[in-house]
Length: 374
Image (cartoon, rainbow, N blue to C red; front, side, top):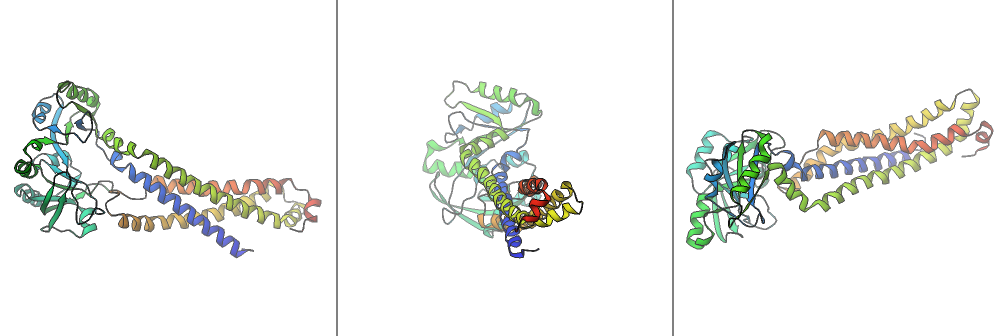
């Protein structure tokens, strides 16, 4: 506390660095949230060329007959715009009778589910989506079609919650039958197609075997398939933006390196100013181990003080950031692993910053130290 301003600014720098590190790591975790929450008993079948190309609806019954398949449904990306393009959220046309049976993590009251299934123009939305835009059951949501042109209108019949904190509750689901029948009037050649099939299997150990069997069934057809686990399917999207994820990771560690340099400079100045005092302690019989312990102790206390404040601030800042980003990051929360990394980073900075000053103090002679004027 001899130089309160310098110590305070160092702690403030540590707070900002640890906060930034935690926030950046949380962004990386959010990028992989879909893959981490994927089920090991669900497969996804898409067109082998690209997701842009659909699959015939008649594939469904053929896949259902494969041994080991216990359930199947389908989903099609809609890509509508709510008011303005910045209001992005995932929208899928689904089979209302089978889709939610494959996703038990989506919790919907039975009465609301019945209301959705009986209303062709009804929709189910996630709790985060409802909170972000203020939707409630009974509201009408207008969408402007992009992939499927026209003005579309849906009535909210149910709002689903997640069984776990990591469940994506930012999605919008409506009847595929409604989409298909409407398109028959506007573009008949674009009907009876789906985006992907979601397949439930009994034994996750047979995922590769069943995937191969599905793809073999449609080999050399007009719409060949690619079947993979749900996790692999989600990671395929992440790989498209892998460069961004890598950049964020690099920046998170650069922030720690910068604050390490600041902390090291602070400890070097502190030790240099006290050389004569350390020499006096040596003259009184205190050994090098005791003196280096003082320096390491001071450095770790400063770094952990800044680190703990930074960790405490990470949670409200991350929550605020999540609200500002809306549904861009469906799952955005600070994990325990991130907190452990923040603690480790703060401790490492404290230890590394004290290394050179402690070595110098341990080696300085009493005479040389007493001559020092700081």
